[in-house]
Length: 179
Image 1 (spheres, rainbow, N blue to C red):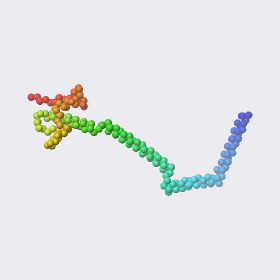
Image 2: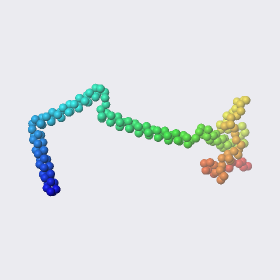
Image 3: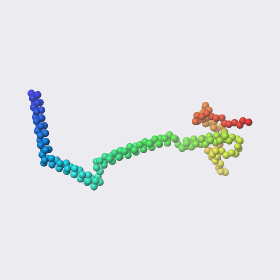
Image 4: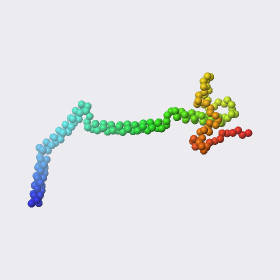
């Protein structure tokens, strides 16, 4: 009996679909229905245009305007994040370089090394010869620590155990006077 009910059900559904199809075809083919549908679509278009005009007159954004603004905001946000990342890298590099005192100490050591090198080149042959970076003190002033000349052997303290300088170059003996 269930087979018979299933086939009856299928037959009724098929007949209903056929009847609905014929009815829709007749309605669409009828000039009044066709004119009514055309008028409805035209009215919908006019309402949409009026809605756009009213929203523009009230200075209200449309959905497309809001979407465009959202995309632009995301773009600006990504750019700001990139700038923040760059600033973080710069701050880290500045922290890695160290404080100004360490840089000043290193510059003073380089100046002292230059004075030692000049003293080795000029030697004792030219007493009273001006040295690089001399800062003559005014009468009554003490000479500054940066301009005091170090003893001739002070450059040796910059050498490592194997006799190489800090940059890895082998140390050179100071020139000796040969007669």
